[in-house]
Amino acid sequence: MQMNATYTSLVAVGDSFTEGMSDLLSDGSYRGWADVLAARMARVQPGFRYANLAVRGKLIAQIVDEQVEAAAAMRADVVTLVGGLNDTLRPKCDMVMVRDRLTEAVERLAPSCGQLVLMRSPGRQGPVLERFRPRMEELFSYVDTLAEKHGAVVVDLYGAEALSDQRMWDVDRLHLTEEGHRRVAEAVWQSLGLPAEEDWRAPLPPAVPANWVARRTADLSFARQHLLPWIGRRLTGRSSGDGRTGAHFSAELGKAFWVNPADHTDPGPVPEWRRVGP
Image 1 (cartoon, one colour):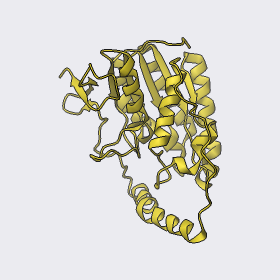
Image 2: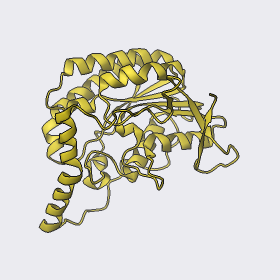
Image 3: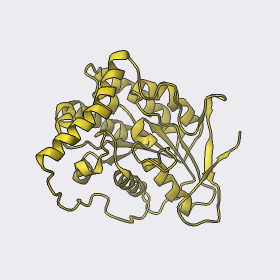
């Protein structure tokens, strides 16, 4: 990877991880690592353009069918693709299908952009990770294979112990906190050959163990607010992403659109993005 490379555009493709849950802003929207990364890239490149097409709850087939063609058409300098993990968490998961659709996505995106970025997604320490670890690692092994074949960069978040720390994860136990997303942005930034600003793998300070009552209270709150609704959606065939489109995708026009910083003269973080074109 070329150090101190220059990039003028970024398109992000995927599910809730890339949409930005649970990095919640005061207006109720999500930011997430892709927005943080785009803001940093815009800070050093005037005229930088960005599009986030990711939608929560999407399976790999939906990502391919609903996002990949739109992303490829944008001919971006950088495209990030993260998908398939939601599939591995389903009781019945066809890993052959996951591999085939992921291959389809990479084969379409890699020739359409300057640099394709894939990831080995992070996992929260706990029983869910242990239960689904074999499927996840099978997925990540294939990500590595595809990256080598198609010249993609792989960001190994799964191998970073700090990102598996439970304190990096929101109360829903499925999505990273603001700090987790910030570290992912730094990891992708460095993978693109841009100068490091911090050690994103740095461990957190030693944790203070919670007492039994606090742990049980947290477990009950998690089950009531997040686990039971998730089970309900699975039983009824619904998804949290039903009826949603990516932040920078126009359902009316049926295509994605670019955004760039509203104020090109401000060298700091991007407080507001504006739509480019129709």
